[in-house]
Amino acid sequence: MNAPQQPPGWQREGLATLFDRRPDEGIYRVDRSVYTDPAILELEMEHIFEGSWIYAAHESQIPEKGDFITLTMGRQPVIINRGMSGKINGFINACPHRGARLCRTELGNRKNFACTYHGWTFDSSGEALWVQREEDGYPQPLDHINGVGLTRVPRVESYRGFIFASLSDQVPTLADHLLGAAPYIDMLVDQAPEGFEVLKGYSSSIYHGNWKLMLENGGGDGLHPDYAHASLLGVANRKLERAGAVQTMQIDKMHEKRGGQWAFGNGHSGIWFNFPNPENRPIYKRLPELTEIHGETKATWMTSVFRNLSVYPNLHLLDQMATLIRTFRPLSVDRTEITFYCIAPVNEPRNERIQRLRQFEEFFAGSGMGTPDDNAEFEECQKGAEGRNLATSYIGFGLHNRHEGTDEVARSVGIELAHSGIIGYEGCTMTQYDRWLELLTPGEG
Amino acid sequence: MAVETDFSTWQALTGVLNEEAAALDEQRWDDWVELFTDDCVYWVQAWQGEHELANDPERDVSLIYMDSKAMIEDRLWRFTSGTAPAAIPLPRTSHLVGTVTLQALSDNEAQLRSHWQVAAYRFKELTQTAGRSDYTLRRESGRWRIARRRSILINDLAQTALDLYHL
Ligand code: FES
Ligand SMILES: [Fe+2]
Image 1: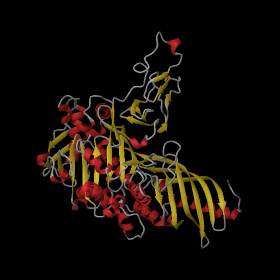
Image 2: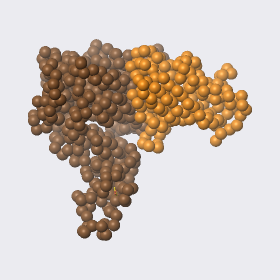
Image 3: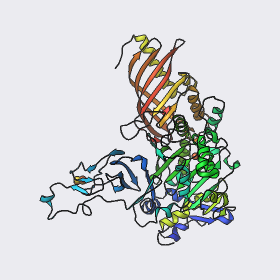
Image 4: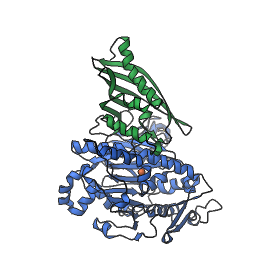
């Protein structure tokens, strides 16, 4: 590939030189500076994390009026709350006066936001209620909404309980953003009559690597489980002989099962394959009733098919070894924070819940037996990316025999695809970088 | 609420906690796992915000929840198997266990609380974990073993990995 002699410019032409993109020949190379260049992270912050839709939170995290959570979108501190009217809002978590953060805890319930620095107070819809000595200090009354009210996150919308937000208002509708990811989300939410909720007890983990390493892994690395997770597969085998053990969902040799990898467009992607042991999933007991409601095809997909969904750029919605939300954000070019939320049907029966919890804890979060091995590999990739004499990654698996457009299987569950391939299909990574390039060079495509 | 006992009982009980820490640091894995009863519960709680814990391991998420020695052996097998990238190499660790109090004592059962800090060193970087644990020790054929260890980890942000040797 013709590696750039100079750092690329901010235009598409420059950034495009980071890729040798010849899918028909089975060639796709990515310059590893995408993981190491701080200037690229600045662009990503501006155009991706602060310039387009990202996943923010789940509605069940703020069920009551006044509930809020704090998060960071790109570099910006944000509050997501359920106002006293019931409406979900997003605000920049900074006081209009001198910028002190209004909410300093991860979550809580507040009817009003009072700033502890000089006392300015705002209601749950962001309107200023009280400004210190307003009559003494200003020539005329202040505009409590547009002048000294809280600054809103321009777009905050939910899809089936999943709250997405954008710090730019120049974004498509949420539906146009999600595309085929939406029916994939439906296959999770429709499993429970009262929907899914985030369970109590969440945790985060940090790895020393670029955020895209997590994205690429969860968004379609069907080649790593037999190797990176060999030890977990070993644990799964040990348990097979043990009566009463909560069994692990079998993911070894996934390429030998019926399955595939999908690119939905807009950088979203997914992996699916038929579980050899669906009877070990808590939802499997619901197969008869789900068949009645949704028909056999969908019910089988809900209960018996491993499904990874990656919603560009920061959400993995997994319904496979366990059911969870995994969301991540860059802290710096080589440091990423991942947060794990186990999700479950509202009012799930006790035994099913216990099974679900043990399956989640076994693999996921920094304290599980799967996540740490992924984290360790991301860190090794980050160190490897410093090997500048070998400047590119070779990510072309399954590109030459990919399928363009949607296919029979996807259509059977109402999903439109951009392209797809066999298990291991690295076109899922290519679709992420296609989106990356589009977002980083707005107005050029 | 601490209770009193004689010195030799105190030594026998705290000896279990000391040996647990030492066996982990010295990677004497067989000695370590033998400290647990077959039906032991090993639980590390997850947090929900700054000061609330997820308290029900059958409704809420835990960081680690194991209810048999076999599950502990699975974890041990994994991180010593040489097939787990997060444990190649394993970190060196140093456990500091302190402020141990005896909470309750009967003939064959004792409850203790300990506080601990663990330094772990891997790839020339030091990470630290800190927390406290409530233990139930049970005397089985003359030997005190761990029947239950419930731990609260104050810094639950896992650095790459969080495993039993960090606790
Ligand atoms: S910074 Fe909030 S009132 Fe001054
Ligand atoms: Fe993985």
